Structures are given as structure tokens and as C-alpha cells.
Image (cartoon, rainbow, N blue to C red):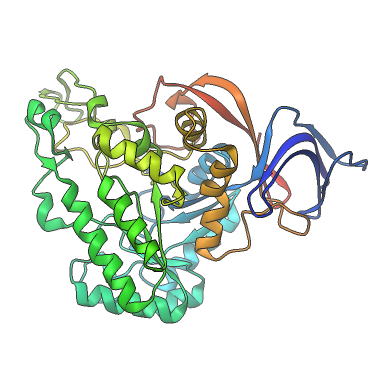
Length: 439
């Protein structure tokens, strides 16, 4: 299929291109990028006033497949990703069974090639069953094509075991995605440790829960030389530590999620008692569980530092930590509900609204943090739409305003704190390998 995109504002960080131009796509690749292209095409797209950027790459997605298909499937997750402008995603390994061997890696990748409309790269677990006791088959999974290992959802608390895993990853040339949470300090916490938790009578999660493990993992990366990527950073000290690590020349990168740079614990909605769907009796609700995520929503100070860290290119990536749950999972109290929110279909709009419109990021930086930087960190030949590159492209309308409606999501998960929120900027089209995956 030949596609000609006319008169778009082409934003390509790899070449620092930011100009009005046409893009010709032939045989799955960008064949021309210049002004005034005259060519026969199966589809001509008028993109005047729209951004034409490399397709977004999400380094942090929970597809829930295999084992939790009631929450999400590879097919629904990929459709949600395409709707959000994503052309490549990294799937976390905390499925059932856990992705701790090459057979499960092959299952996901084969299924994604069959039913997915975007590129899926499966991440492998650090330990068998994510039990933190014995290393997973990292070598076998690397042979099957994993780009990284992660214990996401958990932390390997045994520092020596984690060091061995990091050394293996370094030797194999793959990335370590770090979930930074000192489980010994969580103590049943369900939201940030502050006055809001006290008012709700809920146990809080201190910043040090994240900060201590972030510091440990940075030190271990120094010892092993592994490429370390800190997931879902939420604290002001995380920004400070990443800055120090980079000043020391360490191979450390970090991501921030839209919910962490948009919301604080002050935004958590208190709710009235609701019905227990199983026991058919009223339960004492305390707060809207769509605001329960791990790490939790922090304070205004933390949010400000995360925004400035993204602005100053200390924090490299915007990722979603897309974590779908069923309505039944979330329709309970904060203490009982699982952590997690969906994000694939709202991340681009929130990034534009909260960061670009507010002057923290330029459109070029948005493309860097949502596409070019992830590709560079993972080590894949994507995030670039110059001629000769794969035609993974997102077309984005920076002027379109709309209200987020979870009922319109392609994801099975509707667990979002952003339902009803007005945003600016919308994904119009997602092109994957020269084929339109979403329009």
C-alpha cells in the first residue's frame, strides 16, 4: 500500500526535523520526506495543521496475556495501543504463567504477530515465577528475542541475586527494567503517606520505599555495567538520583508516567459506600480505587520535580504502565483493590495537555520521550521516520479538544482516573509498517 501524507508538521527527533513537508510511504517504508511530493498513492492524507511524528513506543505495558485475559488480551491491548498512537510496546512478564522461559516468550510473540496490529516485544522475568529465589532462564529468553528483563510488579529484594541477573543482562546486551519498591517498607500501604491518607484512615507508602531501591539499583548498575532503566519514577529524589547517575557517566535512564506528572494525592476522590458485588451488601468505601496505583500519586513537590526532570532531559521517557483490571477487581475499597490504571489511550493527550501546553516540553521533546528515546534505550531501529526507515508513524492533532471517555476505550480495562477530564491533542491515525492500524 502506498500512502502519501501531505502538508503535515513533520517532527523527527533523529534528524531534528521540524518542518512542513510531505511523507511518501511505499512497501512499508518511508521512501520520501520532502516538500511538494507528487506521486500516485492508494491513500492521500491531508495533514495540514497536524503533527507527523515517529510512532510512539511504550516501554511499560501489562497485556495480562497469558492467564488474565478477563483483564486484557494481546489483541485488545494492541488495539488500545494503536488508538493511543503506539506502534511498539514492551509487555511486562507478570502473567500466568510468568514469562520466565523462552516458551512463554514465543507464545506472546507468535500470538502478537497473529492478532496484534502493532509490534509487541515481550520482556522476560528476572527470577523463576517472579518468586525472587532463583534466576529465570535469561539466556534462553534472550535467544527468543527479549529486549530486557524485569521483575515489574515486584522487586528482587536479594541484592546478590539481582546483581547476578544484572551481570547476565550486561553480558547478553539486554536492558534491565527496574521496579523500585522496598517491600519491607510498604507495610500494607495503599496510597502516598501524607495527610490525605491520614484523613482516609489508610496506610501510606513513603517516598523512601522507591528511593532506597532506586539508589541500590543504580549502585548495582555501576558495579555490573548493565543498562538500567528505572520504571514509573514518582519521587523528587528519583529525579535527583538519575541526574547524579548521568553526571557520573552511568548507563541509567528513567521513565515517568502521565498519572504521576498530572495528579497528586490531593486529587484522590472520596466516595460513598457501595455494594459488594459478591456478598450483595454495602461495603465501607473510602476513595476511588481508580486512583490506586503503584507507585502511588505523590505530592505537588514530587510532580513539579518530575515535570522539570522531563523538561531538562534528566528523565528520558514517558511510559504508561498500562495496567488493566476488571470492574469487579476495582469495585471495592482501597485496601482490597489491586494497584494499577490504564494509560495507552490517554498518554499522548495528557502529555500534550500537561507538558507541551504548559511549556515544560516542546513538541520535539514529546516525540523524543515517547518515541526516539525509547527506541534508543531499547536498541531498536525505530523512532525515526527519515527515508529508508520503517513507516511507523503517528499523526496527531494538537488543536483537538475532547473529554476522555473510558467507555470509548479499546482496552478491556476502564480503570482510569481521567474519565471526564478535558484534554487537548488527539491521535488521528497510527501507521505501523506502512499499514493503517488506527484511524
